[in-house]
Image (cartoon, rainbow, N blue to C red):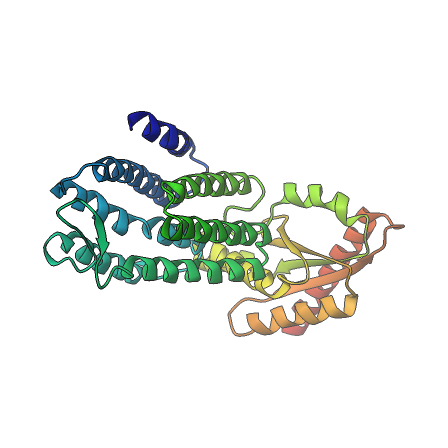
Length: 354
């Protein structure tokens, strides 16, 4: 028995321990994000212990009170990593996360009181497991969290974070498969393994993104721009240069916090509007470039006009310019043309403002 438990859980425990090591030694991501990942690791660690203990106790012929605790812990904690991953996915948005924990609290209440009520599960005198009338509750909660995670993953993909969106969709798929294998085919310890591997991989992916994306706006950074230029040189591309108007005035009157807010607002607007057309890069303090492959200048202009329309409802405005690049052309020259057109637009808007 001990040999089997070690064999089936050794890799899962090793993965969780490696995740602990990454989390405790890495400081490239925010403390809040690290705390959530650490909580996921702790939950999976407890699940491994609870499931292993429950499996060991299930081999006996007498139902012990400890088995109620280990079984209830499994029911309570299984949906938890899914919710925590969803919180990580929605890290850029202000949400009332405490509302999402209400189903977990109800689930815990019913699970841990089942030793008396037998509503969720119970064991007969021969230590045989039986489902109660509301045994579906943990699966329903997990299903709701998985649906939310899938929906938010697709939204993330649509906002231009395509790789992250695809990774999260695949994680949802693997979790559904793992839950199905445990529920219908009575496999053991599958969900814990998938949860540990998925969380570690997702963490390492986000860790790599800290070197590719701007910390303030989450747009791709200047380094990513020059790396990606090589692939854009092979296809017709529309280059859109963008600069925020009067950022110095905003900084002088409202402080750098107000300036940061202006930069973030413009970046999010550009990201949202151009998500389906191209990639957004922050190449300077208030300077952005959007690369739109295999499109036309007319379409890119329509999109940037939409950005200006959205920003007209705020106190911020931009200047912009475009240039058309063909593979036979010099990319740097096309980029300079786009910048020149942007500065001409800035001059026109300053004159008009007077």
